[in-house]
Image 1 (tube, helix red, strand yellow):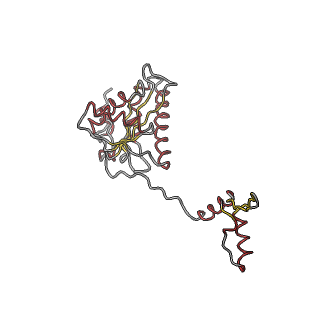
Image 2 (image 1 turned 30 degrees about the vertical axis):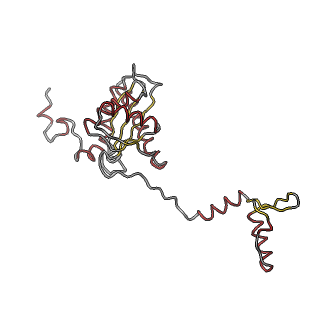
Image 3 (image 1 turned 180 degrees about the vertical axis):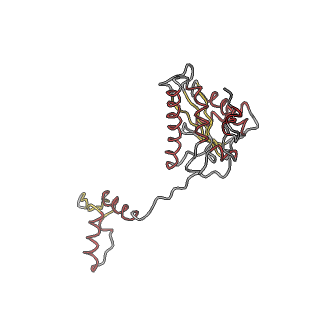
Length: 240
């Protein structure tokens, strides 16, 4: 608050000044002194007017190469356990969108780290690891990895921007929907088996953002399905 007498107005501008003051402030009188109080609603309107022609500029995280940044997420499947498995680990390379899926018994950092090492020792490790499960979780996972692989140095990435939040959530939802479809088609509740089929299907599908399949983005060619995707005529490899 500021005393209304502090408003410096000359005589010629007094009426105009009073008008604009009353547009922006409420006048409160306490012990014969007048104070100005900002009108919150007017302030919001003023901000909206000023920003009406402005667009929010969002700078997404950009990875220029494979394994610059990796994202690890846990999908909750406790409502549909497959024996000892109740969680799904979804690891995605930020640049190629290539995913790796593993069934988990728990959310423990040691179990997550063990499965991530399977990926990292096959494709190499990312420079940055990020997750929606929080900094403490990622730090615990990184520490577990270093316990087993001391040469591996990974840093914790900053949380994703809200703009990219929806993209990862959709990816996790896709995995869940595709897995349920696999279970229905195969009349099986063994989703831990279906995970790798879903992984292959997701990596083989065209990705809108990168303009190709994650498999091709990583390996430079489309995936093969044995002789089925070869140029050989079917009669060569199909025997009655």
